[in-house]
Picture 1 (tube, one colour):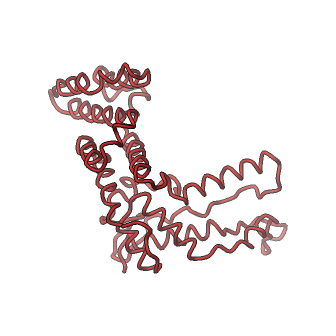
Picture 2 (cartoon, helix red, strand yellow):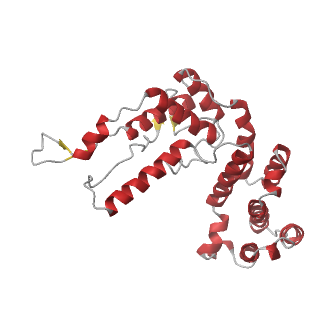
Picture 3 (spheres, helix red, strand yellow):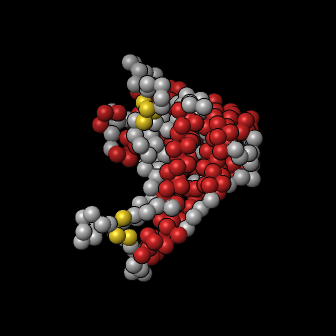
Length: 287
């Protein structure tokens, strides 16, 4: 198996292993004889099992919605995914629709999967509808003689009735409609951020978490929780003036533009896993 996502999953596992069991060298008086900090010696004594690391990686691939990579990694690591990999595809399709700006399709797919997800989460539902309004405004303001009527009609029918129920909804709606007033090339940062792809990514992540929660699964991958816990522990240790190396690396920084063996450079994914790198951007956890 030499596909890009298979290669990526193996490299990701190796980076996780090195990050969990990293050895940070600190310089000494001799340039040829690096010494270890006492903390690094303690870290080196921790020997996580390969199977534990494999399950961490598999959990990450399943939770974040990379079915093709999860399937190939399961074969390579000889482990069985704890969920049906095919069930991930529904979340992948919803995420892909949001990332491409097709919010109506995403909402329809969410309701087909479980209508209670949006019914029981009005904040998430409003965020999706507002993003749909942003996409309508983007379309009409970038088209010659663009007609703003569809955007205004959508805001009136879908968002205006919901806005009075929450002060934040009203503020968000007013700010979004301001995109119709000011030229797109001269927007204030708080307005230009609405047109940035990061808004799509943020809402797609929230939708993914809501779907997982509705299915009784964890909202975040265990690996992501471990990274947060590790950062919190380091912060507390430094606040308590514990003896730590000046810099502690996670060891999860990926190699960039790695050749996948086919003569083409690759970054963490393949065409089989939509949005493997969030439209070209590496996962914030490992970038």
